[in-house]
Structures are given as C-alpha cells and as structure tokens.
Length: 49
Image (cartoon, rainbow, N blue to C red; front, side, top):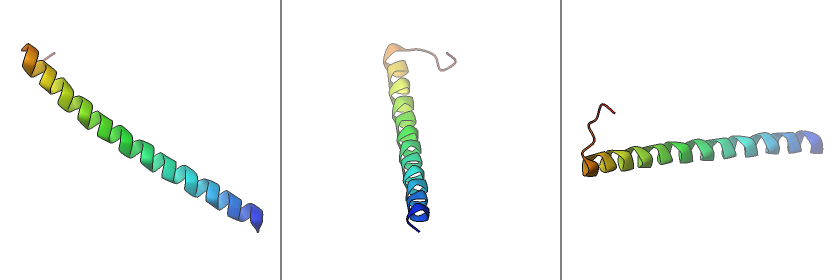
C-alpha cells in the first residue's frame, strides 16, 4: 500500500509541477511579447521584422 501511495503522490507532484511551469511559461511569453512590441514602438521598428 505504501508503494502505491508513493507512486500516486509522485505522479500528482509531477502533474502540479508541470502545470505551474506551463502557466509560468505562458505568462512569460505574454510579458515578453508586450515588452517586444513596446521596444519596437519606441525604436520605430516596423512590425514585419
């Protein structure tokens, strides 16, 4: 029983970590996209580049 419980906990822990990392990555992507567009606006870089 202990082994099964440990395996379940390990799986749950990995799932939670994966969710946190994916949310963090999505957030950073949004922040970076916003920052990039602001830099382009300030420097007058056309959107095609």
